[in-house]
Amino acid sequence: MPYDPSAFPPFAVTVDLVVLTVRRHALCALVVRRGEPPYQGRWALPGGFVRGDEDLATAAARELAEETGLQAHDPAGPVVAGGAHLEQLATYGDPKRDPRMRVVSVAHLALAPDLPAPRPGGDARSVRWAPVEDLLDQEAGYGRDGEPEDPLAFDHARILADGVERARSKIEYSSLATAFCPPEFTVGELRRVYEAVWGVALDPRNFHRKVTGTPGFLVPTGGTTTRQGGRPAQLFRAGGATLLNPPMLRPEA
Amino acid sequence: MPYDPSAFPPFAVTVDLVVLTVRRHALCALVVRRGEPPYQGRWALPGGFVRGDEDLATAAARELAEETGLQAHDPAGPVVAGGAHLEQLATYGDPKRDPRMRVVSVAHLALAPDLPAPRPGGDARSVRWAPVEDLLDQEAGYGRDGEPEDPLAFDHARILADGVERARSKIEYSSLATAFCPPEFTVGELRRVYEAVWGVALDPRNFHRKVTGTPGFLVPTGGTTTRQGGRPAQLFRAGGATLLNPPMLRPEA
DNA sequence: CCTGTTTATCGTCAGGCAGACGACTATGAT
DNA sequence: ATCATAGTCGTCTGCCTGACGATAAACAGG
Image 1 (cartoon, rainbow over the protein chains, first blue to last red):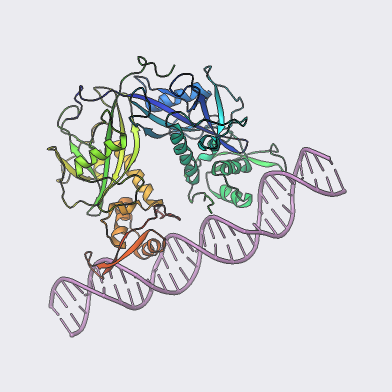
Image 2 (image 1 turned 180 degrees about the vertical axis):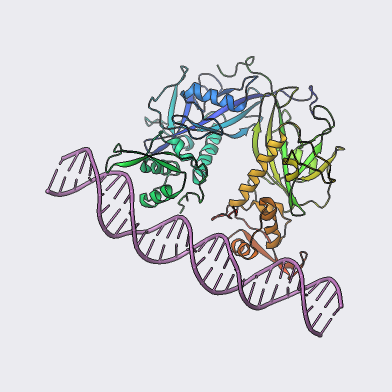
């Protein structure tokens, strides 16, 4: 029964990317404006077709590089300076998700530090970082300039929501939050990442005790910085530990 | 650039299933023997093509029903008596994973109670439950009868390993372990599920305190049973809570 | 019937960790 | 000099876990 070459319907396979970063204390996602129907003029997640000889992870890394210029980490490797974390998120294959044909999309999640160049992309389409809060509040969504925002194209709102939820839960028990930080960062900067992703305020003293007390999470570089104002803060790099045990607890009402 | 109808290569899309259960104190997976090349005669995960008008979750539920007769839960619904938990696991799309053509497989994970009928399946292929330990120790794998076991077909060993790891981590912070139990079960039976999935011994007293002290995890039915021998034990059903907070801690050396 | 075995269930106690919060330090801004 | 801003170190209390003693209620066998 399996694999009769004439018995399977052909599918198009794409990768879509949920690229997240923290900008101005807000969790933001990368969106591109669609230049053609369907959903022409609407914002959508970046993505594209998987090539015939290409692995899924390779296709996702290629799309990420095309849109942002970011290099993805080697999957098994440590958090590398300047690189982005990239992992598979989930696959979406509703028969009606694309009105033109049967498309299965393998969504990936990328976490990137705040990019110095706001629009480094490769092609001419309109690209921007938008707060996920705005993108997901379809009803009351408003753009940066106060204009009402259309919901994302296709099922991309759902994909984005799943990606955000994955990021929110994963920074609890892994050191992934460092993927949002530049190569060297302070404890306070890392705390602001948690606060932006979770949308809560954390006690600076307990946070400091927790992250500096977890072996392998942070390694001091010896330097200090005052780029956040106030007393100089120690600089750290991400340590080798990828799993946090016990996890960072997400405050909850 | 996107969606030029002539610009995308055609893919075949399948769903493969990692169906897990606990039998005789061991975590077991459902495997079928392949009747045709490639990998003819080797064991593989059950699966099949996604139909042209079918959602991915629907295809997975259909395959599960065909192989086991189990009804999958409604995704958002509670743990239903006799039904199996079913969720998407990950997608595997290496260009060379199937030697004949480009196949992308959307793997799903199903957790089922120990089935009374050992071989309820729908078609004539050889089907069995095999301890995951045997299936994953490719080098030293031996079948029930002591004969050496070939590794699973395709990349199914990897998919199985990913599914097992997902199950192992997910029972930590969710009430999913109850999906391995019959509709009514005792605390001791639930503890043996954890012990089989994690491969560790748990303290019965601390486990009892933990699960009965977590609100919404277990609801007593009022009945008791002695089917495990010893003093009669209270019977419970799975409560409404799906998330365990704080989580069940997996002992670790 | 008495005894040993098995499983279930309740209790106690010490250590670890998190939340709340006080205190002090080192910068830059006015 | 003074204030505002961040960072860092400590203390205390309550909760949870792991270790483990003790009791309860069934069955098996003599």
